[in-house]
Amino acid sequence: MSSTSSRGLQELILAGAKDIEVSHITGNLSDDAKRRSVSAFTYFVSTVDKSYGASVGQRLKPLEMNVWKEGSAAAYGETVFEITVDKDMCNVFGTLHGACAAYIIDPCSVSALITLGRTIGVDGTGVSQSMNLIWHRSIRLGSKLRVVSTSMSLRGRVRSSRCELWEGDNLCVSAVHSTVNPWKNGPSQEKSKL
Image (tube, rainbow, N blue to C red):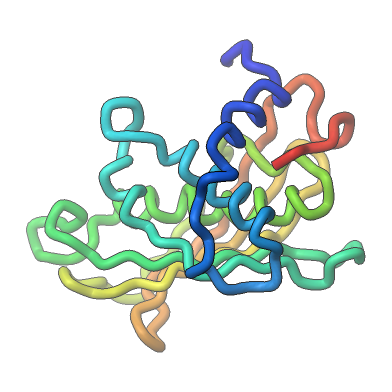
């Protein structure tokens, strides 16, 4: 485990947030909250020379960011991304590879946790604990996907979110992703600036 503290990680993530363009992103969050959420997403996707899957992750376009029922115990975050399935994302049959679907779900599902965490003052970051995916139908090369993620639980160190990959009105993949916040001074003890 890295020796980076939660606060140190937050500073790295937010370093370039003020320069991020968010006018194309709809939703009920302020532009500043959208910038911080996009900054966190961009940080974790990273670059091709530093991180697995970054060539795919960098093509995920944020469309919408919301926090619903803000101020209540039932508050939840929701993010929507879009991506077109390219050849480098497909298997030999010309359909989205299962590992690529899992990769897409990873940062997108966490984005809903970070978006909610930012709003309620909790560090929504973490590392994957489990991911359960269900394939409902194949996704062909050239398909435009809408990736909808919704936070489920952000209490304590273990948190979870739901993620769905849609092609038009067709649900193609659904998943539940569980993460763990590894920081010594976790979300119950330290307010987040994300």
